[in-house]
Amino acid sequence: MERRLHIGGRVKREGWEILDVNPGPHVDHVGNAIDLSRFADGTFAELYASHVLEHFDYKDALVAALREWHRVLAPGGVLRLSVPDIDILAHLLLQRHKLDANQRFQVMRMIFGGHVDAHDYHLVGLNQDFLAGFLTTAGFDRPKRVQRHGLFEDTSEMIVAGTPISLNVTASKPAPAAAH
Image (cartoon, rainbow, N blue to C red; front, top):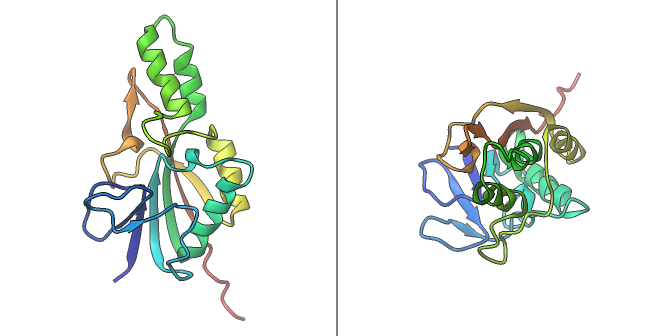
């Protein structure tokens, strides 16, 4: 049976293991998503992470985390991820005629993190171009925006003022080239 890892998950779903920085009733592996050393190369057929990458510093940690995710993904495996789309959030923040101060404050929290615990701080804003660049640098192939993943009811489907705020992307780990 192929293994699948939900990074940052909280809700159990058959066929998925959960890794989270905080322990919880359904968390199978407690740890930081930048260090997956407990898993061998190519362990997982699929990885899923919703609103996790923005917690990594764009200078070094973001690419290091993506490289680690690439390492544990099997060749031909798929990465499905969602991040808050900084372009959409910036646009919403400026909608004074549509959103009151409290609603815009909530958008600001989506940009910088909720600050509910030591891990809930956002260190980078990502849009399609930035994310595609980080994914390519980490070795992923064919990053593609998708409307939704449809796997979990989570932040990947969040809507604010009638606007979906997540950038949902799939990318793959290239399969080895066939020998000639």
